[in-house]
Amino acid sequence: MITASQLRAARALLGFDQRKLAELSGISVPTIQRMEASEGVVQGTVTSLMKLVEALDAAGIVLISAGTASPEGGRGVRLKQ
Image 1 (cartoon, rainbow, N blue to C red):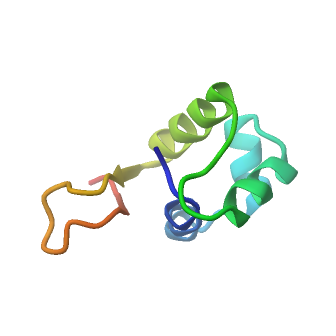
Image 2: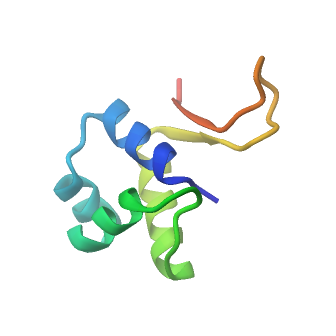
């Protein structure tokens, strides 16, 4: 699962605008906009969510789930080494 905040943060880390992420993921710009505007966990079809996560992974993003070992245990994103 990915939250809207994680999606916006990942895009910012990569320096991508919504159009660039849409091109890389094969998802429309309006869908990216809707996902980023949502509250909490991003809603979408399984196919769209998989395309989004795969595109972020290929671009070098690691999604950090809630409860993953970190000082605060919250969700987040980071760049791969």
